[in-house]
Amino acid sequence: MADKHTRSMPYRTLRTAGGATVVTLQGEIDVLAAPALAARLDVLTAGPCPDLVLDLRPVSFIDCAGLGVLCRVRNRAQARHGRLRLVADSSRFLRILHGTGLSGVFDIHSRWPEDFTGASVADPVSASAG
Image 1 (tube, rainbow, N blue to C red):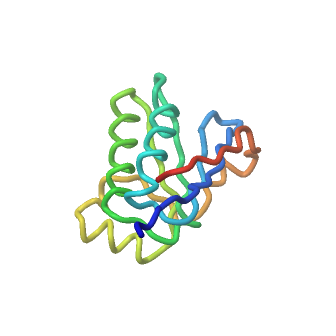
Image 2: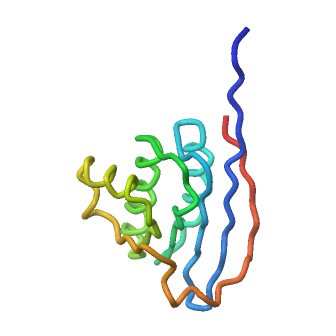
């Protein structure tokens, strides 16, 4: 009997008073979750000058497919004269970035930037990957 791998990739989109879109990612960012996540982030980086913050603190695991999504969204934001910031405080995640040569590629903050303290939920979404 074949295993059916389905899982929900929950995330919340926030809009701040400063104009940045903040997405809190949770759980595992892997080959199963990457396609749905990439599709959602493509929408968020489709316009001119996207300002996107990905909060990775609740992420428990990320593989090369997840790193690929982060690189893709960074490249899309930069191509549209926007920016991507990551919020990550996991030493494991930072070691992965260092080991893959990506540590200098991303704008990384260890805690929630002060300018996002006034953020409010604007678009709760749950996507399925599988």
